[in-house]
Length: 311
Image (tube, rainbow, N blue to C red; front, side):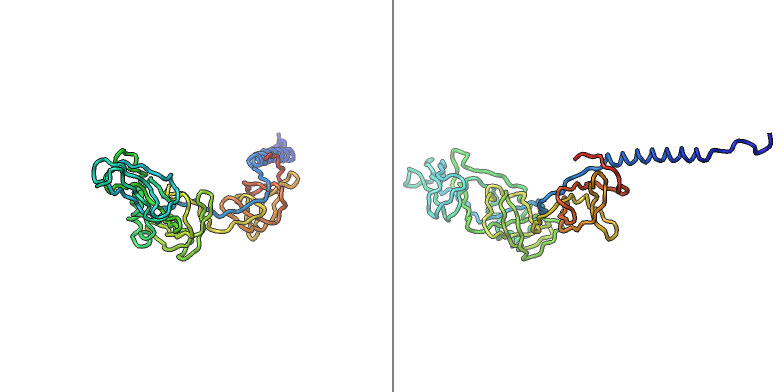
């Protein structure tokens, strides 16, 4: 057989096989990509700028002490407001230090305010004055020893032992709020917090680097801070925005363009949008109608893919 007379390869068939394999692989890849995508409907809502921080609160508190030894009988319920001079408790005689009166000694309110029998031992340590004048690292380290206690659980208390405390709720609450170095706060800033569902405004009186945070004077008494000195509060660091919301992770940036992929009659299409406001979770946008489905986990190469996803 002459040299080189063998059958020539069928290039057309080889190309056809390559194309078929490539088409099959592309279909498989496209189906896999589509199966990984998720959709979410564009709806009206709020973009909130909030952050949960820890606060250590200080109020104007006066600890009541027993003028004599005896068994404590309390009159007002916890948190009741009393006038100065009203009776808080009676010490029934135990035979010591009652002098001529054997019927008991009355304990009266030295100031007008709210009465509490429970104490944490920091009433005269964590105060508005100490937050402003003392070294905060050492001061706040004492909060770790906080213990709710009441001597009134005992049958008999000794002379000068705490009976309870009065809280002047007409004076504003103060707090040290723990922040991060990235938090943009300056002295004299007006700040807003939500505490147990109620909003309060305060003024930044002092900044601290150790520990990192700020001393805040509120415009009023913050409810619940006597019962619980340490609280997780919500710092509202910017006014909220209302509008059409998409997940922040759905936004894509290509050079000067910023937009989202959305479901256009079953096909993935890219649409430029204007971002009006955003936080870590959602963005307020314009450029899409309400009710459109956006792809929440976009990736390159999905333009034109057929979407077979249920929300």
